[in-house]
Each structure stands twice: as C-alpha cells, then as structure tokens.
Length: 114
Length: 116
Image (cartoon, rainbow over all chains, first blue to last red; front, side, top):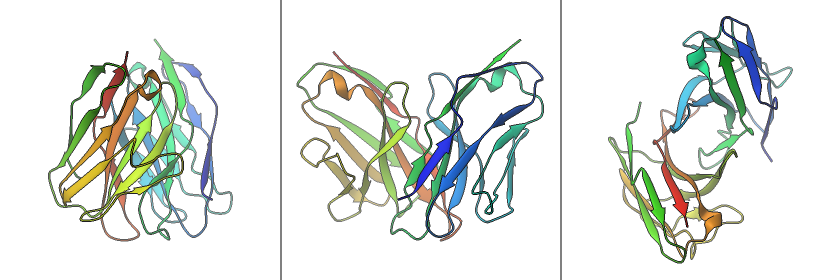
C-alpha cells in the first residue's frame, strides 16, 4: 500500500537558518504530493503541492520538488522565521484509487528560536 | 479553494456520551472525508462520506462507533458514539477539489474533543 516516510523530529533551528525536512514515498501509479502545516492550536493548512514529476511547489518561501527517480518530496526554506514554528506533514494522494484520500507521514515538529 | 466550516470547534465530553460533528462546505464537492488526529500523532482516515449511500470505513473504524451522514454535496456529519478518553482527538473534515489528476485536499479547522 501507499506510505510516506518523513524525517523524524523535533527539529530546532535558529532564525534565518536553512531548513530541510525529508520526505520519501511509496505508491502505485503517479501520486500527487503535498505538504501541510499545522500551527499550534490550529487545523491543517495546505502549504504547497506538486502533481507530476519535476514539478516544484512553492509558497511562503517554502519549496519542494517532486523527484520521481528518488521518490522524494523534500521541503526546503532558505531562511526560517520564528513564525514558521509548526508541525509539517508530507502527504500523498494516489489518483488511481477510487477516492482521493490522503496518506500522511508522521509529521515533523519544527521550532525556530529567535 | 474550498471553505470548510466545522462545528463544534472544541468540546469537553463526558465518558459514555455521543457527540455529532458537523461539516459544511461552501461549494458542492464529490469527495468528503473524516480524519482523526490523536494527541501528538499524524492523521488517520476514518471514512469516506458518500452522498446518498453508506460511508466507506477504513480498517479499524466501524459504523456503530462512528456513524456518518452525507445528505447532500455540501454537508456531512460524524458522530463519535459512547465516548471514552481514548477518543480524545482532533476530528477533521476534508474535501477533494479540482479535476482528476490535479485534486487538492482541503481541511476544516478541526473539532478538538476531550473526553473526561
């Protein structure tokens, strides 16, 4: 079955540091890939997505590139801010299924210190 | 993007009682899903809410415990029945939006339930 493996946290960085959160996946077919973010005390928000190989999703300074050859979708940001402190979830949606449910990774807690 | 409203946003429930969570979407959507997020955990799909027919449950979830209604294309409810402290979780409604192959899944703000 489909699965998503995320870099284990927690991750603690200083403000303006470079961020990478690794995400690899296993899926049949050609999944769409997503990063969601959950700020403290809030629900899930879509951060970015990519629907086919070599697509790059980007939003709020975050980027992730769909790498089919390495089955990866690593999240990066060049300079993190304190306000980026949140839990980040990598997820995939397999379009070959009859429904568009998501398979989530375990989540990575990010804390950015001033 | 779809705007999803969930009610209640938070509640504290007594053991043995049941609570119904409502999910309202601002547009008609084909796919609606219910997820559970236990404290400090990732999200687990409970079921797919099917309009006009019984929900499709994932392994480990049953209709008697989590009855779901989907009377139309913009509304669904999830009931958590006979609650125990282990049911303390965030329950999230989500919808699929977009054409086949480009679907994006959007989430409501979640319903944060604490069972005491």
